[in-house]
Image (cartoon, rainbow, N blue to C red; front, side):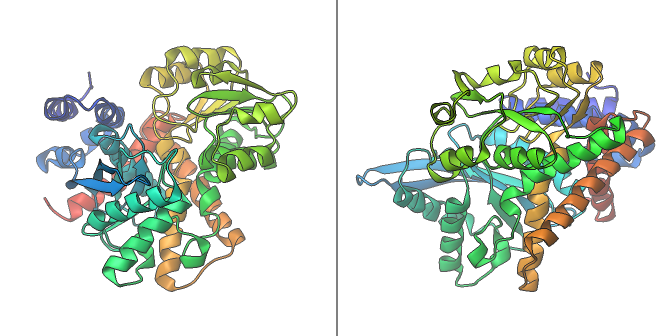
Length: 449
């Protein structure tokens, strides 16, 4: 139950309208439970129906995606784009290609994206999209044909001043290249800022690949420094996942003096007590697109264990979940606490279940929620859009410095919001309020639309 009657009424409406969307319901509840003091200070929000509008997407697009495999067989997938909120800028958010993709997951991601983009300080609204297509095991030609079919429909709904997609799970440099090529072909216009995460040869930004993982560590480092007078130096770190976020969080945490001892994929996890050899991981995951278990066969002293959730049984000082939503349940959270962790920061979107977050906060761990901690990727996407608009590119060092400034500012903004609303150090509440307030102000100023 929510403490505020207005917020409870809105949440009940969400449940009634979308009873089969648990991920979306969870995301909405976690935000609304932080906003009771905000709506008490602003009774005009209820009169304007602001929260009702805030939790409902401005537009949802669904379409079929037919494509032909290398054997000439026809397949049909579903494509989606959730354009959730454009009060502070064009819709901005990734595309996810994964069998688990459905409306509930995309609406939860789009809803979170509103607040995440707001926290960056850049003029970007919130959106998300994707398909239940699985690129794993597909040839490059099959992926190309799918992406071309997907973009043939999506191009009707996007534009650099309307909606700017990017990559997400299952959508890397290869997919973005195919998507942009088809957009350019159909529109006969080089609108580079229409999609981000592009290759460096055609409008991409240096440091974009590293941005989410690096940004996660920049915010975590600032959190450790300001709230615990500590740092990554000398700490043992466990990171779930082995995609771009996990790989470059490993790289930056190591640069900051930590030892990362574990990574995972959807099949299982590796444990290397000597510290992860990142060159081997990059070769396995970024070049060969293989499974993480191959690491154990190549690096003496490391082990591989089937089942990815067991990674949280490995003792660590800092846990960085970077795999997928709801990967840390209450039991895993209790193990992380028991093993002596001091901080958890979310690199994936909503990787900790609500009961897990409660365990962390009750135990006094520092906890940075995803909408703040993993905002580095979309922040650098915003910087890519700026470079495209200027027909200019910044150096890696320039982009990295801007990214670090954004992440440090995000930490201080969410911490300051937690103090202002009487819950100092509760960064979950702080992130929800700080992200929401900017969007709410813009919505109120623009009238009931």
